[in-house]
Image (tube, rainbow, N blue to C red; front, side):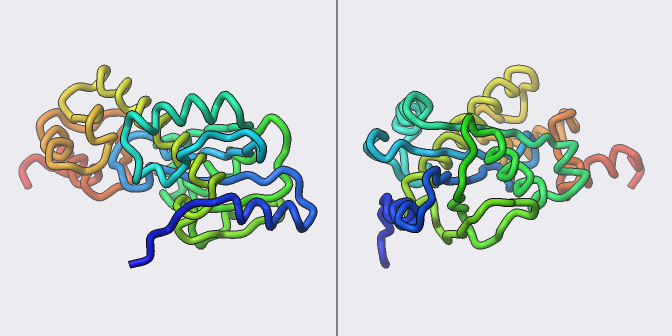
Length: 212
């Protein structure tokens, strides 16, 4: 099995083609039953960025937290949450793409090139770009975006867990773990649940038809 190691090669190649502000873009939170989908766009300073950048899933929580602070201190970063209402209005794929486009648009200084994790180009993206499969394990900028998005969203879900105990969001970040699904059956649906997702939709249907 090939082990992927992130580098600055994609960014350097874009710089050599004349682009000056290359942003890495990633999202987190497509799979949860609750909470927003979150995207981050990050433009690294090629002469000053943290050591140890990697796919957020390959890092410990302690390491992610440390890198999060370092990235925010030395890079141009924008983080965007797309709400459950928008997820339910559109669909999770479209919502995640909206988050990516908005994150790029929210940078302090506009990016002129985007490196996008995955193989799909978000609709409405209006700057030159390339998609990179497993980009968070191959590009430092996308890795940085993956770390920022995950830490931000995990912290948000910990806060929401204090407001809505019983679902385990502080541990499962809204993903459909047994604890979360048991909480849904026991406590019902909160305003932070995605009503278009089948397990949540089923609970709502049962509430409307209790005799079934």
